[in-house]
Image (cartoon, rainbow, N blue to C red; front, side, top):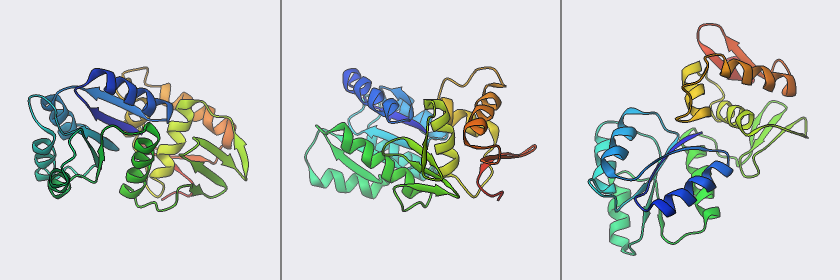
Length: 220
């Protein structure tokens, strides 16, 4: 899952980015409002964490512009201010959730998981795809009830496909959301990753419609 984190405090941003990475996400990090607005308006993110007090362009202005441009990715706003009126304004502007500072990283990650599930229409905390179950809370994947040993990239791949089961995911989209902003690599890297995953979970786990992309479970 590829996320955008917009936070001007570099220490806080680094700590959040580390927590997100450890939770299985691929975060892009920016520190000013102009860059946050541009990336959110031109890149496809699974979720954006947006600090309200960014320099150059504040969070409320940014989210209003995104929504006016029909950008519908879930947005979790962060604020150091305690005003309930400001939180209401942010939600009315298009924010999906609000988290006041200081906060526990566990709560932040839980909110991220919930918002991403909700954005793709998944209600359960554990994602089931036939005999496969994906638990984003523990980052564990089980096959017929047996836990599987996956690398972080293998987990990101199966998690993204699991969140988007029922549709064929183009290779460029899958590569971007698995590798984040570090996907300018060998074109065969994704195929190698999928081959490794099939060896562990079974050849039928990840399907491919040639010329269109990849899917998990039954072919859409």
